[in-house]
Image: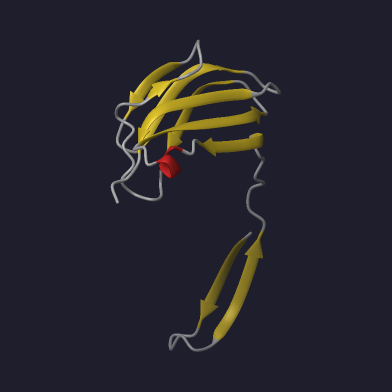
Length: 118
């Protein structure tokens, strides 16, 4: 929903308000699961990330971004599933190309992700 308000020139009194329904959000993924290896608990600096999901529509590209905590390094990342191509590996982003089919479980394994330095 979108809301607009009109206030007096002093800004202390609402003169009118309007609310309008926006666009409908249609979920594109279901059964999303993200798992990290427990390498950090063993004192290792490199971890493995597994992402799986069931998409509603076909696709061919998946972006995985690490937003928090800062300091992950994905530049040396590799993939652990045959048939997938690592198109891009940056500090906090990997881009994977593979056949993503509607209604079928998709799984990506990103290896050699470097943990942030403590």
